[in-house]
Length: 304
Ligand SMILES: [Zn+2]
Ligand SMILES: [Zn+2]
Image (cartoon, rainbow, N blue to C red):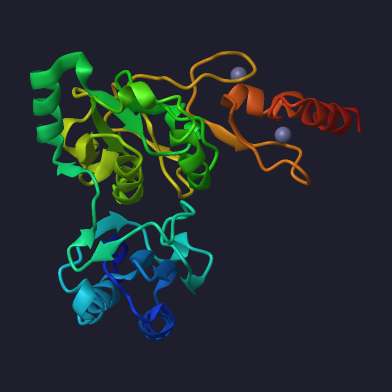
């Protein structure tokens, strides 16, 4: 039996013809039997693909042939082609949808004017040196932070990455503009963009956690400044860095500790993902998101 793997990667670099790169990547993945998602934009590439380990190795070699991807790092993860429904390779305006395609500037070294990259140990050194003046700024959607975040982190009120610009322009965070701000996200890609948008809007001392929460958690487990579980975008939904993790998530129905996200039972009109413990999720009456219309739909389903 052959071994399968998943590759995760991104690279910010100017791509003059994203469509050509997209077609080349699609052919390459098809020829190697890889499945997953790849987005190519004028600013770079972002992908997650899975398949046979030898096919993955060939994919890395071939992809690095493109000059801008020559030194791209690939992160290996457990899984394979079966973890994806299909192969999707798209050319878009942005590899992360902040709605900032015209503002984001990249050159051969990556994003221009982004926050200073800090390795996990450098983040801890910064906090040791500057104490409570350091602010952790969550670069993810608010939902993700419900089950885990950095100690005392600021969690912006955003449903999607698209909401960030309005949020940081709202004035709510102006008092942070003169303080050291450490942006963080799952694997680092969102902070590449977010940190540059913050600097452009007057935040003077902005850092970004290199490799994201994933790398920090691998280094410090549950004994560093990270608290709780990490929301992940695959069927696992969340992961922990060891067994003694804090439990920050609360069931919206009973208040019990949980990391269990469910899709609201009102599938036709509600796309909300909410924290509902397994016991409450097992009952139709409590498998809704709490909004009046959805409560009603759940009640109707129970009555049926
Ligand atoms: Zn519950
Ligand atoms: Zn709902």
